[in-house]
Length: 136
Image (tube, rainbow, N blue to C red):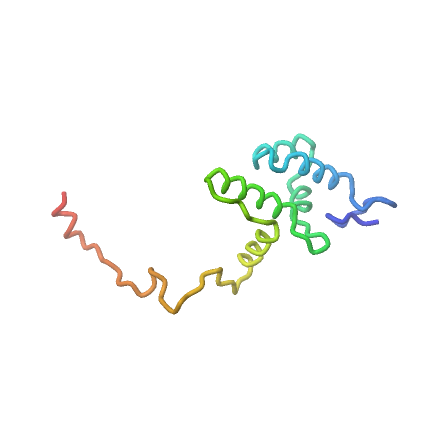
């Protein structure tokens, strides 16, 4: 049987290979309790390589958001709550933002009411050094 994360051989009755299982176990124990740096240290201490970890964190299984999306949503919610705002970022929201940012034709989420963006169409001020002589 093939591993559901890395598509390598997992074994006869296993759905995941041993290295991917270790990544998921470390992730499950650490999510929400460890920052990025500490999580990377835990992966390295377990003897996992960056490609192994990235493969598992980026895998979207069964159409669900990836583990990286889940971790990013959790971190965003903690940050928002610490700033006194409600944290409502879901892993699906993170996936939607990530996919939109990765699309070459993506225009983002800006909704224009017909007005130009403040930086568009505004006259550019030119500094010729005249004002600096007066203020110095």
